[in-house]
Length: 301
Ligand SMILES: Cc1cc2nc3c(=O)[nH]c(=O)nc-3n(C[C@H](O)[C@H](O)[C@H](O)COP(=O)(O)OP(=O)(O)OC[C@H]3O[C@@H](n4cnc5c(N)ncnc54)[C@H](O)[C@@H]3O)c2cc1C
Image (tube, rainbow, N blue to C red; front, side):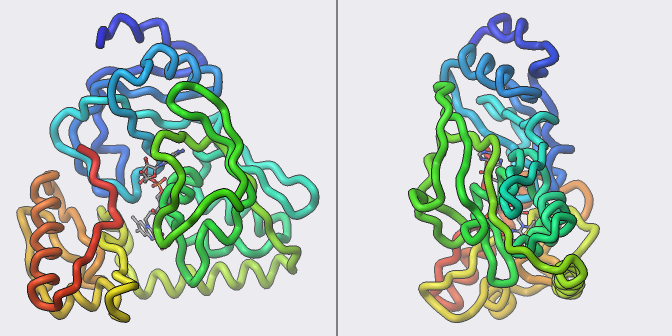
Protein backbone atom coordinates (compact mmCIF):
# COMPACT_ATOMS: atom_id res chain seq x y z
CA UNK A 1 0.00 0.00 0.00
CA UNK A 2 1.53 3.32 -1.08
CA UNK A 3 0.94 6.20 1.33
CA UNK A 4 1.15 8.59 -1.66
CA UNK A 5 -2.09 7.08 -3.02
CA UNK A 6 -3.97 8.61 -0.09
CA UNK A 7 -2.39 12.05 0.18
CA UNK A 8 -4.98 13.72 -2.08
CA UNK A 9 -7.78 12.62 0.22
CA UNK A 10 -7.06 15.37 2.74
CA UNK A 11 -9.80 17.92 2.12
CA UNK A 12 -12.95 19.29 3.69
CA UNK A 13 -14.56 15.92 2.80
CA UNK A 14 -12.21 13.94 5.01
CA UNK A 15 -8.96 13.82 6.94
CA UNK A 16 -6.34 11.16 6.35
CA UNK A 17 -3.62 10.33 8.91
CA UNK A 18 -0.86 7.74 8.98
CA UNK A 19 0.33 5.84 12.08
CA UNK A 20 -2.44 7.58 14.00
CA UNK A 21 -2.73 7.14 17.77
CA UNK A 22 -5.87 5.23 18.79
CA UNK A 23 -5.32 5.30 22.55
CA UNK A 24 -7.35 8.43 23.18
CA UNK A 25 -10.19 7.24 20.94
CA UNK A 26 -11.41 4.41 23.16
CA UNK A 27 -12.82 4.08 26.66
CA UNK A 28 -10.15 1.64 27.88
CA UNK A 29 -7.51 4.19 26.91
CA UNK A 30 -5.38 1.34 25.55
CA UNK A 31 -3.94 0.84 22.09
CA UNK A 32 -1.28 1.70 19.55
CA UNK A 33 -1.59 3.20 16.11
CA UNK A 34 -3.61 2.68 12.95
CA UNK A 35 -1.49 2.39 9.81
CA UNK A 36 -4.17 4.47 8.05
CA UNK A 37 -6.81 6.54 9.82
CA UNK A 38 -9.59 8.25 7.90
CA UNK A 39 -12.10 10.63 9.41
CA UNK A 40 -14.97 10.92 6.94
CA UNK A 41 -16.47 14.39 6.98
CA UNK A 42 -19.01 13.62 4.25
CA UNK A 43 -20.46 10.72 2.32
CA UNK A 44 -18.50 11.84 -0.75
CA UNK A 45 -15.31 11.79 1.32
CA UNK A 46 -16.06 8.26 2.52
CA UNK A 47 -16.79 7.00 -1.00
CA UNK A 48 -13.57 8.62 -2.31
CA UNK A 49 -11.59 6.91 0.46
CA UNK A 50 -13.11 3.47 -0.21
CA UNK A 51 -12.36 3.88 -3.94
CA UNK A 52 -8.71 4.65 -3.29
CA UNK A 53 -8.31 1.99 -0.57
CA UNK A 54 -9.90 -0.68 -2.81
CA UNK A 55 -10.14 -3.27 -0.01
CA UNK A 56 -6.36 -3.67 -0.02
CA UNK A 57 -6.38 -4.42 3.69
CA UNK A 58 -8.64 -4.72 6.71
CA UNK A 59 -11.08 -1.93 7.60
CA UNK A 60 -12.23 -1.26 11.13
CA UNK A 61 -15.02 1.26 11.74
CA UNK A 62 -14.52 2.94 15.08
CA UNK A 63 -17.53 4.44 16.83
CA UNK A 64 -17.18 6.01 20.28
CA UNK A 65 -14.73 3.22 21.22
CA UNK A 66 -16.75 2.14 24.26
CA UNK A 67 -16.76 -1.57 23.38
CA UNK A 68 -13.29 -2.16 21.94
CA UNK A 69 -9.89 -3.35 23.14
CA UNK A 70 -7.24 -2.23 20.65
CA UNK A 71 -3.78 -3.74 20.09
CA UNK A 72 -0.73 -1.85 21.35
CA UNK A 73 1.10 -2.48 18.10
CA UNK A 74 0.22 -1.11 14.69
CA UNK A 75 -3.21 -2.00 13.37
CA UNK A 76 -2.19 -2.93 9.83
CA UNK A 77 -5.41 -1.89 8.07
CA UNK A 78 -7.47 1.28 7.93
CA UNK A 79 -9.54 2.68 10.77
CA UNK A 80 -12.51 4.79 9.67
CA UNK A 81 -14.34 7.20 11.94
CA UNK A 82 -17.50 9.09 10.98
CA UNK A 83 -17.21 12.86 11.34
CA UNK A 84 -19.65 15.73 11.88
CA UNK A 85 -21.91 15.25 8.85
CA UNK A 86 -22.89 11.84 10.26
CA UNK A 87 -24.26 13.38 13.44
CA UNK A 88 -27.58 14.79 12.22
CA UNK A 89 -30.87 14.15 13.99
CA UNK A 90 -34.14 14.76 12.12
CA UNK A 91 -37.75 14.09 13.02
CA UNK A 92 -40.37 13.29 10.37
CA UNK A 93 -43.90 11.82 10.16
CA UNK A 94 -44.37 12.90 13.82
CA UNK A 95 -42.87 9.74 15.36
CA UNK A 96 -39.89 8.81 13.16
CA UNK A 97 -36.31 9.90 13.77
CA UNK A 98 -33.42 9.67 11.35
CA UNK A 99 -30.07 9.65 13.16
CA UNK A 100 -26.56 9.83 11.75
CA UNK A 101 -24.55 6.82 12.88
CA UNK A 102 -21.85 9.06 14.38
CA UNK A 103 -24.24 10.63 16.87
CA UNK A 104 -24.16 9.36 20.46
CA UNK A 105 -26.94 7.13 21.71
CA UNK A 106 -27.41 9.59 24.56
CA UNK A 107 -28.12 12.44 22.10
CA UNK A 108 -30.60 10.29 20.19
CA UNK A 109 -32.36 9.48 23.46
CA UNK A 110 -32.51 13.17 24.47
CA UNK A 111 -33.73 14.23 21.01
CA UNK A 112 -36.48 11.64 21.21
CA UNK A 113 -37.50 12.93 24.65
CA UNK A 114 -37.47 16.58 23.45
CA UNK A 115 -39.88 15.53 20.68
CA UNK A 116 -42.22 13.76 23.11
CA UNK A 117 -41.32 10.29 21.82
CA UNK A 118 -40.80 7.40 24.22
CA UNK A 119 -39.10 4.03 23.68
CA UNK A 120 -35.52 5.28 23.43
CA UNK A 121 -34.97 6.14 27.10
CA UNK A 122 -32.63 3.15 27.57
CA UNK A 123 -30.16 4.72 25.11
CA UNK A 124 -29.41 7.47 27.62
CA UNK A 125 -27.44 4.85 29.63
CA UNK A 126 -25.22 3.49 26.84
CA UNK A 127 -22.06 5.48 26.06
CA UNK A 128 -21.63 4.52 22.39
CA UNK A 129 -22.61 5.88 18.99
CA UNK A 130 -25.69 4.89 17.01
CA UNK A 131 -23.49 2.90 14.56
CA UNK A 132 -21.85 0.95 17.39
CA UNK A 133 -25.25 0.35 18.98
CA UNK A 134 -26.65 -1.16 15.78
CA UNK A 135 -23.59 -3.37 15.27
CA UNK A 136 -23.75 -4.62 18.88
CA UNK A 137 -27.55 -4.63 19.16
CA UNK A 138 -26.83 -2.84 22.41
CA UNK A 139 -29.39 -2.66 25.12
CA UNK A 140 -30.34 -2.46 28.76
CA UNK A 141 -33.50 -2.54 30.87
CA UNK A 142 -34.98 -5.26 28.62
CA UNK A 143 -34.73 -3.08 25.48
CA UNK A 144 -32.35 -3.39 22.54
CA UNK A 145 -31.71 -1.57 19.25
CA UNK A 146 -33.78 -4.18 17.45
CA UNK A 147 -36.90 -2.88 19.27
CA UNK A 148 -36.72 0.68 17.89
CA UNK A 149 -35.04 0.28 14.50
CA UNK A 150 -36.95 0.71 11.23
CA UNK A 151 -34.15 0.77 8.63
CA UNK A 152 -30.44 1.33 8.15
CA UNK A 153 -28.72 3.31 5.43
CA UNK A 154 -25.23 1.95 4.84
CA UNK A 155 -22.36 1.51 2.42
CA UNK A 156 -20.27 -1.58 1.71
CA UNK A 157 -16.51 -1.55 1.33
CA UNK A 158 -16.82 -1.37 -2.47
CA UNK A 159 -18.64 1.93 -2.05
CA UNK A 160 -22.18 0.74 -2.89
CA UNK A 161 -24.98 2.37 -0.93
CA UNK A 162 -27.75 0.18 0.50
CA UNK A 163 -30.85 0.49 2.58
CA UNK A 164 -31.78 -2.44 4.82
CA UNK A 165 -35.18 -2.76 6.45
CA UNK A 166 -35.50 -4.07 10.00
CA UNK A 167 -37.55 -7.11 8.90
CA UNK A 168 -34.61 -8.32 6.80
CA UNK A 169 -32.18 -8.36 9.74
CA UNK A 170 -31.89 -11.24 12.20
CA UNK A 171 -30.87 -9.68 15.49
CA UNK A 172 -29.58 -11.69 18.42
CA UNK A 173 -28.27 -10.83 21.87
CA UNK A 174 -25.40 -8.36 21.20
CA UNK A 175 -25.23 -9.07 17.49
CA UNK A 176 -27.00 -9.71 14.19
CA UNK A 177 -26.51 -11.24 10.76
CA UNK A 178 -25.60 -7.83 9.26
CA UNK A 179 -22.49 -8.25 7.11
CA UNK A 180 -19.20 -7.17 8.70
CA UNK A 181 -18.48 -5.44 5.39
CA UNK A 182 -21.08 -2.74 6.06
CA UNK A 183 -20.46 0.75 7.36
CA UNK A 184 -23.65 2.16 8.87
CA UNK A 185 -24.26 5.78 7.86
CA UNK A 186 -27.65 6.64 9.32
CA UNK A 187 -30.68 4.84 10.66
CA UNK A 188 -34.39 5.41 11.13
CA UNK A 189 -36.09 4.76 14.46
CA UNK A 190 -39.70 4.82 15.57
CA UNK A 191 -40.91 6.25 18.87
CA UNK A 192 -44.28 6.39 20.62
CA UNK A 193 -45.98 9.71 21.46
CA UNK A 194 -45.85 10.31 25.20
CA UNK A 195 -45.75 13.07 27.76
CA UNK A 196 -42.25 14.58 28.00
CA UNK A 197 -42.16 14.63 31.81
CA UNK A 198 -42.90 10.94 32.05
CA UNK A 199 -40.18 10.14 29.46
CA UNK A 200 -37.72 12.28 31.38
CA UNK A 201 -38.49 10.68 34.72
CA UNK A 202 -38.11 7.22 33.15
CA UNK A 203 -34.68 8.24 31.83
CA UNK A 204 -33.59 9.56 35.22
CA UNK A 205 -34.70 6.35 36.92
CA UNK A 206 -32.68 4.25 34.48
CA UNK A 207 -29.58 6.44 34.83
CA UNK A 208 -29.83 6.24 38.61
CA UNK A 209 -30.19 2.46 38.58
CA UNK A 210 -27.18 2.11 36.28
CA UNK A 211 -25.06 4.43 38.38
CA UNK A 212 -25.75 2.30 41.44
CA UNK A 213 -24.87 -0.97 39.70
CA UNK A 214 -21.87 -0.10 37.53
CA UNK A 215 -18.59 1.75 38.02
CA UNK A 216 -18.43 5.30 36.69
CA UNK A 217 -15.50 7.57 35.83
CA UNK A 218 -13.18 4.62 35.15
CA UNK A 219 -11.42 3.46 32.00
CA UNK A 220 -13.51 0.47 30.95
CA UNK A 221 -15.17 -1.18 27.97
CA UNK A 222 -18.38 -1.99 29.87
CA UNK A 223 -19.40 -5.66 30.13
CA UNK A 224 -16.43 -7.77 29.14
CA UNK A 225 -18.36 -11.00 28.54
CA UNK A 226 -21.86 -11.71 27.22
CA UNK A 227 -24.27 -13.41 29.58
CA UNK A 228 -24.23 -17.10 28.58
CA UNK A 229 -28.01 -17.19 28.25
CA UNK A 230 -28.38 -20.65 26.68
CA UNK A 231 -26.13 -22.45 29.20
CA UNK A 232 -27.19 -21.13 32.59
CA UNK A 233 -29.54 -18.63 34.26
CA UNK A 234 -26.51 -17.05 35.90
CA UNK A 235 -25.15 -13.77 34.59
CA UNK A 236 -21.50 -13.45 33.53
CA UNK A 237 -20.70 -11.31 36.60
CA UNK A 238 -22.06 -14.02 38.92
CA UNK A 239 -19.96 -16.74 37.25
CA UNK A 240 -16.88 -14.52 37.48
CA UNK A 241 -17.54 -13.71 41.14
CA UNK A 242 -17.77 -17.37 42.10
CA UNK A 243 -14.73 -18.45 40.03
CA UNK A 244 -12.13 -15.68 40.27
CA UNK A 245 -10.77 -13.63 43.18
CA UNK A 246 -11.80 -10.00 42.68
CA UNK A 247 -8.19 -8.97 43.32
CA UNK A 248 -6.93 -10.76 40.19
CA UNK A 249 -4.97 -8.33 38.05
CA UNK A 250 -2.25 -8.13 35.40
CA UNK A 251 -0.33 -4.86 35.62
CA UNK A 252 -2.97 -2.14 35.72
CA UNK A 253 -5.69 -4.36 34.22
CA UNK A 254 -8.10 -5.23 37.03
CA UNK A 255 -11.64 -6.38 37.81
CA UNK A 256 -13.99 -3.65 39.02
CA UNK A 257 -14.93 -3.94 42.69
CA UNK A 258 -18.43 -2.73 41.86
CA UNK A 259 -19.24 -5.04 38.93
CA UNK A 260 -17.23 -8.25 38.31
CA UNK A 261 -17.92 -8.21 34.54
CA UNK A 262 -16.45 -4.70 34.13
CA UNK A 263 -12.67 -4.77 33.71
CA UNK A 264 -10.78 -1.54 34.27
CA UNK A 265 -7.53 0.05 33.23
CA UNK A 266 -6.40 1.49 36.57
CA UNK A 267 -3.72 3.64 34.94
CA UNK A 268 -1.39 2.36 32.24
CA UNK A 269 -2.58 -1.17 31.43
CA UNK A 270 -1.25 -2.56 28.16
CA UNK A 271 -3.27 -4.47 25.57
CA UNK A 272 -1.52 -7.68 26.70
CA UNK A 273 -2.35 -7.03 30.39
CA UNK A 274 -6.06 -6.64 29.57
CA UNK A 275 -6.12 -9.57 27.15
CA UNK A 276 -4.40 -11.79 29.74
CA UNK A 277 -6.99 -10.79 32.34
CA UNK A 278 -9.80 -11.61 29.88
CA UNK A 279 -8.42 -15.04 28.90
CA UNK A 280 -7.51 -15.96 32.49
CA UNK A 281 -11.00 -15.09 33.76
CA UNK A 282 -12.63 -16.99 30.88
CA UNK A 283 -10.51 -20.10 31.61
CA UNK A 284 -11.11 -19.95 35.38
CA UNK A 285 -14.87 -19.60 34.89
CA UNK A 286 -14.90 -22.63 32.60
CA UNK A 287 -12.78 -24.69 35.00
CA UNK A 288 -14.95 -23.86 38.00
CA UNK A 289 -18.46 -23.85 36.46
CA UNK A 290 -18.18 -25.66 33.10
CA UNK A 291 -19.76 -22.62 31.40
CA UNK A 292 -17.99 -21.16 28.36
CA UNK A 293 -18.30 -17.39 28.34
CA UNK A 294 -17.62 -15.32 25.23
CA UNK A 295 -16.42 -11.74 25.02
CA UNK A 296 -18.84 -8.93 24.30
CA UNK A 297 -15.87 -6.61 23.89
CA UNK A 298 -14.47 -6.50 20.36
CA UNK A 299 -10.74 -7.19 20.27
CA UNK A 300 -9.03 -5.27 17.48
CA UNK A 301 -5.60 -6.56 16.44
C1 LIG B 1 -19.45 2.37 31.04
C2 LIG B 1 -20.03 1.54 29.94
C3 LIG B 1 -21.36 1.10 30.05
C4 LIG B 1 -21.90 0.32 29.01
N1 LIG B 1 -23.20 -0.12 29.13
C5 LIG B 1 -23.75 -0.86 28.15
C6 LIG B 1 -25.10 -1.31 28.23
O1 LIG B 1 -25.81 -1.03 29.18
N2 LIG B 1 -25.59 -2.07 27.22
C7 LIG B 1 -24.83 -2.40 26.12
O2 LIG B 1 -25.33 -3.10 25.22
N3 LIG B 1 -23.55 -1.97 26.02
C8 LIG B 1 -22.99 -1.22 26.98
N4 LIG B 1 -21.70 -0.78 26.88
C9 LIG B 1 -20.91 -1.15 25.67
C10 LIG B 1 -20.93 -0.10 24.53
O3 LIG B 1 -21.23 1.18 25.03
C11 LIG B 1 -21.94 -0.47 23.44
O4 LIG B 1 -21.63 -1.70 22.85
C12 LIG B 1 -21.99 0.61 22.35
O5 LIG B 1 -23.16 0.47 21.60
C13 LIG B 1 -20.78 0.59 21.42
O6 LIG B 1 -20.84 1.74 20.61
P1 LIG B 1 -19.49 2.47 20.13
O7 LIG B 1 -19.88 3.57 19.22
O8 LIG B 1 -18.67 2.85 21.30
O9 LIG B 1 -18.81 1.30 19.29
P2 LIG B 1 -17.28 0.90 19.25
O10 LIG B 1 -16.86 0.42 20.60
O11 LIG B 1 -16.47 1.98 18.65
O12 LIG B 1 -17.36 -0.34 18.24
C14 LIG B 1 -18.11 -1.48 18.58
C15 LIG B 1 -18.42 -2.26 17.29
O13 LIG B 1 -19.31 -1.50 16.47
C16 LIG B 1 -18.74 -1.33 15.16
N5 LIG B 1 -19.16 -0.03 14.64
C17 LIG B 1 -19.12 1.18 15.27
N6 LIG B 1 -19.64 2.14 14.47
C18 LIG B 1 -20.01 1.53 13.31
C19 LIG B 1 -20.59 1.98 12.08
N7 LIG B 1 -20.92 3.26 11.87
N8 LIG B 1 -20.81 1.06 11.09
C20 LIG B 1 -20.50 -0.25 11.28
N9 LIG B 1 -19.95 -0.73 12.42
C21 LIG B 1 -19.70 0.15 13.42
C22 LIG B 1 -17.24 -1.43 15.39
O14 LIG B 1 -16.57 -1.76 14.17
C23 LIG B 1 -17.19 -2.53 16.43
O15 LIG B 1 -17.31 -3.79 15.81
C24 LIG B 1 -21.12 -0.01 27.88
C25 LIG B 1 -19.79 0.47 27.79
C26 LIG B 1 -19.25 1.24 28.80
C27 LIG B 1 -17.85 1.76 28.66
